[in-house]
Amino acid sequence: METFATYLIYIHATLGSIAFIAGFIAIITKKGGNAHKKSGIVFYYTMLFSAVSALVIAVLPKHENPFLFTIGLFSSYFIITGYRALRFKKSNISLTLDKIISAFMLLTGIVMILYPLILNGKINIVLTVFGTIGIIFATRDLMLFKNANKLRKSWLKLHIGKMLGGYISAVTAFIVVNQFIPGIAGWLIPSVFGVAYMNYWFWKLNKKLI
Image (cartoon, rainbow, N blue to C red; front, side, top):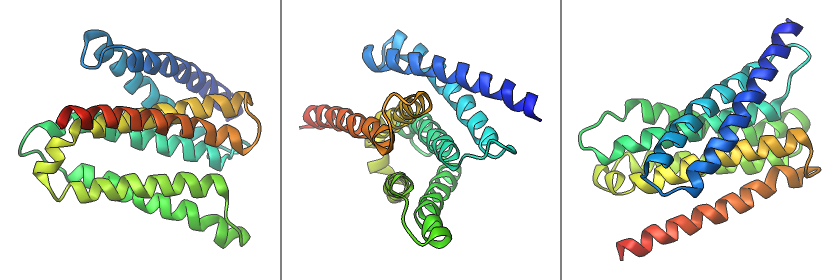
């Protein structure tokens, strides 16, 4: 089991590193361009498998890590929904799976906030912040799914926001694992800068629509 865990950690780290680089290329290249699309596909698949491996590692004996499990869940949610958002520009698509994913994220966010309170009688700042973010995104998704016209108009914002959310998760994991920034700051600083950049893109998109 320990040998399996070791190999899985190497695979996870390798895929995560590739995703880190591919995601950066997708961010800095022209949106919709060939380089953006190809690097985005590489980012999606490497990040997805890296996130899934993180979920497995985090529950293995002697490797239990609720924070790694949290990052794995968030990464999976953001990149899967970010990739699926590309479908929303089309009409008459099935949203059943999208609703299930968002409902699961909503429930997960609630559990992340309440679990430390029930177990230890106090809140966990990191889990509370990430849980709240998950609840906000999932709730917004579920509300958008009720309005097909608005959903179709919002596909690009959803795609950019979710994929950036997945990249923020990757950067957060990279910083925390390598202890580049100690303590809670390492968990929260990537989100602060990432959300700021996300809002910059939302501002650009809103400006085009005016």
